Length: 249
Image 1: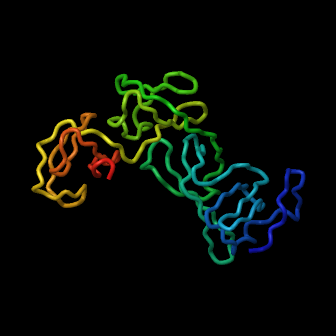
Image 2: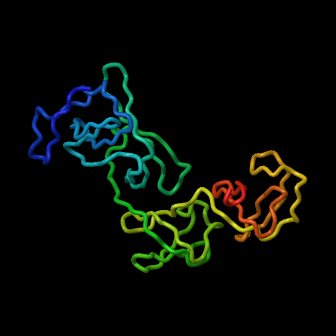
Image 3: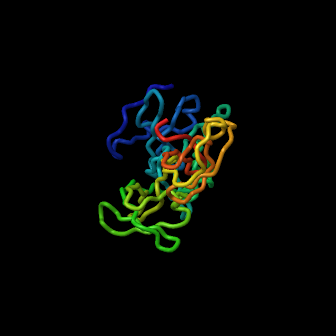
């Protein structure tokens, strides 16, 4: 990789010599990339072992995994940023995006295809779950003490696992609640199931053993191994609502 000039500390320090066309970097190894881009030119701000950062002369937008951006009126999380080369042509920066409200909607675009986009400041705000109101679920913002309602896709299918009085985190963007941060697995108590038996396999989900029905504290029915009894704490996958194993194991 060519030796990088010292980064400028202000716009006034940019000069014609300090601006490089992206094509001159077609042999650079970026690894995981953090890119601030413009339509025509970029400037390397920092070179590290795993990344190269760029500064845009026109648009000041940071593109890196975890960013929330607005594109054509919708919000998307950046999942990955990669660089691709083709011969001596300038590298193409590809951005993998996930719809902020729909985890199933994922796609990839180049930076040029995404223009114009805006970086959207966001934060995780602690909130306490209060109760259900029709199809909505009411949370108390622990910072502002205001009630916040979430329903549908922003809950990510986590409704059966919400516990009154428990604390959760909610993504907030533009000072508005965006979506609930969900956990991949939770622990729940078995309320009703058949008497325990050791006649089948004691393995967990996917173990190929005999399973029986169990009703959990939240009313959810899952299939569990025969040795599970009333009062046991079990781990449940919140995405497919399947038994994962006994809690603590």
